Image (spheres, rainbow over the protein chains, first blue to last red):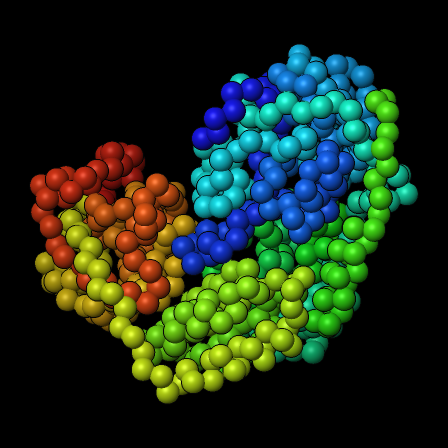
Length: 323
Length: 240
């Protein structure tokens, strides 16, 4: 456990609020999954606007992933905080505050996040990060495993989120034109792979030319989609490792996109894997939204990643005064 | 050996199409070699029955480089002598009290309970894969005489330590969880303990034997009998 005895008190935990860092890596061998933020871009921006390490250097920084909303915290320290991601109304002491912008807070301040009107996950970061002792090298909470965060569970009312005081000046803002909108549809780019050959040309055409609906059976393990059935020529395979974004197709022909808390091995046929930049977009969709799939090559995937990383470094956050 | 694309930063190596100790030995050997030769580029590895998922750092390398590197590093694999894994003995308290499906499994197999216990103990198993949940080790292969399909309705709660059979696989549940395997006993050894070092008593590639212990020995070794099941579940069960 952390030795820090001050920070933020959880007044209301919200529907599902989890401590996350970049994720838990190198532990698949003992069956531990990755965890980590469903939308790493928003997570990275929340950290970066607080002056924390972000992007490829962010592995140790802990922030909160707030799904849907409903979080209320009370600050016990002086610091800066930032919320980025889904459009959840942010209030500090009852006054509306902008997302994608860091704000100074003082001991006694009440921080409230309402419910998302666009997107589903927002990230609340504080300067220096929350001080959470890592478990298997990471603070990422995976509730299914009971590992990470505080006791391996989602946030509970009355808990203390340990954090160290930081100076209140030095706030940053991401210019509005750079902020994403999540909407109700996402185009998911797919690298065909795994058992793709078990899906006939016709089945692949059905898959890549139709929209699928996000069902209400979606969580951090995976998103079940509903739409035209696709049938592989095989029922199952010898259980094998599942990577991030893998699209498995069980017997009912309805695809499941596997996300951060997926089980590490499984035996359903897979048609390929969704690009991680796009699983982030998927995780921002509410049930009833739609997705389409577009095949891309492995080279495209690498290029898109390098471009996105360089873009993230190039966009400059701007200094700003308190709102 | 066949290398296929899995995802944006992942390749999967297939070493065979069937489960066998030889194929599994190759998987374990490949894990060692890749850890040694490609350490800097690797984010994570997922060994399984006949495949190995290799996840690499997209900001340091690309799939051409990793593929070539894998081909080179693993080229000697087919002829290499496979190291035998460690032998780990797991104590098991087999009984109808600790294994609610033991009687049914014996009845279906046309064997006595004692015969099922004897057959389960006789076999030396291999840890083919770890996954599903932290510390869940898939052990194979179970003698066909006591192989049994998964329950048609999975239990909501299988206790920690449950020794179980599904088809020709056996396992010890590392934590209380839902599960559809046939329960034949309880093992007092913790299969996953985050505070222990090592976290798990076995790793992929190890060999495992079960050794029958008495109720008293089970308690002595720190085993805990689960609380009495819900009476509604007991009705018509093997204990009533």
